[in-house]
Image 1 (cartoon, rainbow, N blue to C red):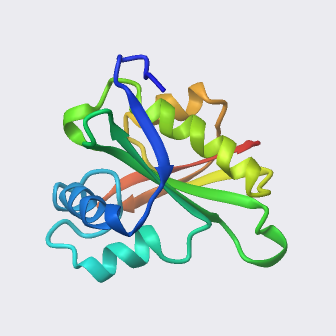
Image 2 (cartoon, rainbow, N blue to C red):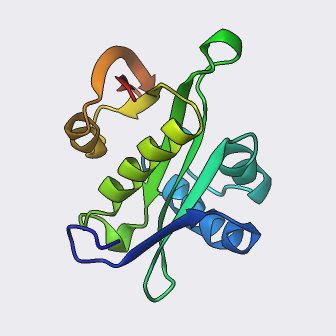
Length: 164
């Protein structure tokens, strides 16, 4: 697919060959304190694997035509048992490729994948109030269903939800 920013992007299920690239990219985001609640600083591989790879329904990786990692997302049930029909997702786009439609492609693909996996709704639990991806989520029809005051380092977190 070609993103609105003109990037040729391929989205596939993440495999073992992708794990090192995903780890490096996610660890850099955590070290920079960007978008995720992990404490900034060094992130061990096992911490990344537990958060991003293990116990997930699906993990996707996006790569450019040249094979460069562009971004990723995961899907998992947001709740156990009778509420497991509600998906949760996490996304990231590598810094050098932001604002070129990759985030939109990841969200769109995740909505399709979630429906295919049998989920009927999606919820994002802790979207920092300052996160520019909020506009993207709202463009895809997510609505604010809650706010957690001072969730992380004094910043509010927004809870988003939408039917699939």
